Length: 451
Image (cartoon, rainbow, N blue to C red):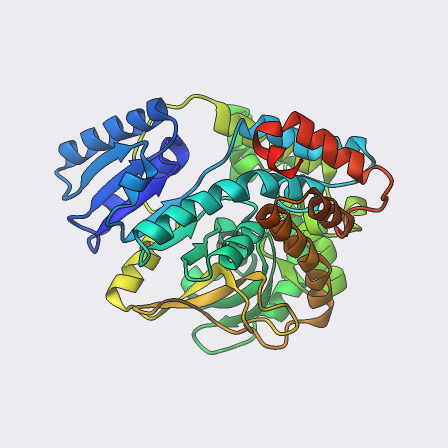
């Protein structure tokens, strides 16, 4: 096999994905090609990978090139995680500029006006990547880790319906963290179904794998105390006292004194609201889920969101010693193994075209659903009877993705303006055109095509 990593100059993505690949016996003997437009960063990853392969006697060859078309020749699998420009500088624009123009958005990465601007910058670049792949290695599977996921997958499949393009997101991993601890059960004994749109997904069904018992009532009963509960000096708080760093960016606010102290999970108030009003557990946190809701500003934990953003920015911009670890970070390598080995297992979350998987959502929208992985590839599993309250929230947002895709494809500013006017987060119209034009001016390197 030949596996290509696009965006491999990123230490986090490049070295993390190499560790996943080097763990695979199914991919043993494969060629791994690193590709990035930043030759210096890519060379550091290549040197580290080459040294690691030699030191551990691994049966892989690793090479690198800044020539994308050369990288794609004879590729079987392409794994892509890219960003354009200075990630956090542009993110600050996406978040703060709409707020200056009167839009109460809670984060600004994937939903709301910030998510639209993020999409308008990154989707054209990803379309160029997919265009090369379709022309050079049309049978290759392309796995995308970039955000905004739904906008990317929706637009790519509209332009290149023949592309074997799948969106991958690790937010589903929150359920693997929350549910076993909440229910005091082993993860392997839990069988769950989640679905919706990326970062806008909920747990829909949960059973005990051993006897088929419905466990969702237990979640509804225990979740509130799980997210706001009486604890002793937890392992995370002990770690904070010793290091001054909160693991995972989680903020525990000490409310009372003494050995038995109360701590509040940050960035989970909207999670609690969804449990109380919709009887549904979101698979992610306030900062993601709240980007798609007109009323989220009134509910979310604003302090927790800002604290997490500061931690996340520091975590990704602090220089680190390059290191490859032989441990699984993401789900894409097991999926590749499942395709090659006709495994037939169920993957809990992929992002693919709806095409009837969720009733009452358009066929053209990318949805996040479980899928069967086998020699046929990635086949989505239909989710019938989506709860109507949640479905109404999903329907409120899909038009934004339609207009965003059309703005990119037709290079039309009017569609970009209309995408923001259609956004549930936007409550005023007067300044929207000026806001879009201001963003085009300051992010012209990526948005000039809309002039």
